[in-house]
Amino acid sequence: MYDYLKLICGDVHVVKGDFDEALDFPLTKVLSVGNFKIGLIHGHQIVPWGDQKSLATLQRELDVDILISGHTHKFEAYEYAGHFYINPGSATGAYSPFEKNPQPSFVLLDIQETAIQLYVYTLVNNEHKVSRIEYQKNKCL
Image (cartoon, rainbow, N blue to C red; front, top):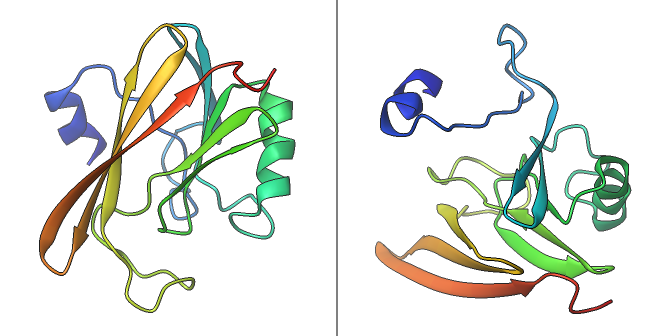
């Protein structure tokens, strides 16, 4: 999959998931995009999975404005303590212990100077839905 994504876009960033032992990817990654520092983590390292306070601890350790995590296969996006947290979910609707009927989802980020438009794509009852969430950097400070 990684090689396929690299064919589509040369600038692909990947972190190691819980079934990626043989792959040589980092467990976490920090990117600078515009005025934002963005942290990436698969999420299986967070205990309990998807826990807001545990994610906030990692956000502080990585010193990022935005933390993108996964593992739960459930979409979430929220502000907490002046930072933004995103879980894009699962584009395939893979099994999740948190959802009886997982909903396929993925996100697209439009990053500007101090704002992000997060476009959330979901498949609900065989119908494609798109919603938008905005995050303003430092609006809470």
